[in-house]
Image (cartoon, rainbow, N blue to C red):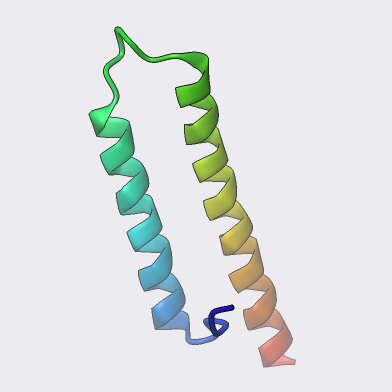
Length: 65
């Protein structure tokens, strides 16, 4: 298991990288041949990013207390 990211700069960098990957996947999709499974994968990617943001937010609040 990887080490938890607690540094704010590293958290932002991680999220930027994940968003960049998402954008690359989105740009590579052909609208004419996209299937429901492809859309589901995109939604899952966004959900994963959102979950990670919540995790980072929780970590930063708990370390500030």
